[in-house]
Amino acid sequence: MDGMTQRIVEHQSALKTCRSCPGMIGPVVVGKPVASRVLLIGQAPGSKEGAAGQPFAWTAGRTLFRWFGDIGLDETRFRDRVYMAAVCRCYPGKAPRGGDRVPNEQEIYNCSRWLTRELRLLRPELLIPVGRLAIAQTTDVGTLKEVIGRIYRVSMHGVSCDVIPLPHPSGASTWHRTEPGKTLLQEALSRIRDHPAWLATIA
Image 1 (tube, one colour):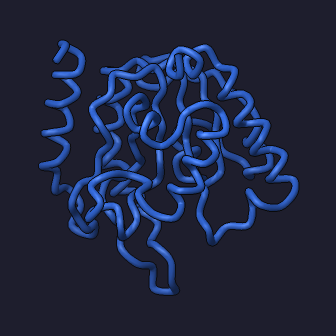
Image 2 (cartoon, rainbow, N blue to C red):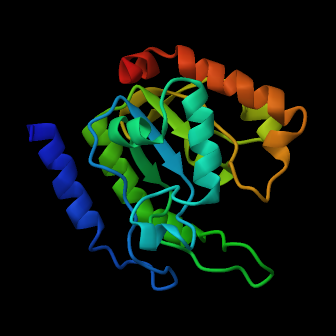
């Protein structure tokens, strides 16, 4: 194990002990300790990911990995080569009116220190935020129509990198399956496919 991987393993070990948010439902969900040029940022685990022990382990994940498979990385290779983070790392629970609860501002703030640490450790060249909540942490988010298909240059916590947002692959959402979402999604995936950090990751 090289020095960078060891630092990531130590970081994740500390992350797994976090109990800062009493409204969240554990366990903490993390991806593999990959020293990657690409950092994916999800929103928060769903109800199945805790038991599965990995992010995007259910229906939305199947759609997400199909997208990435189309541009060169199937699920196994993606998990082995891309660091997978999230805005919040524990399941927020169900919303009163159905669906998963959106983490509140305090929960997002509590968990932000882990993402900050990951940015500083990895110093990624490409961030891929998935879904509105993740996009909002990286850009001044407008509507999905305004941000999907574009590339942004940002500086976060002293780390400069490119950001290419993706819509959330939820089966409950029709955005990525209807126009203009279908076309904008393909534009975003094309930008990811052609990015130097992605090309290096799939090589």
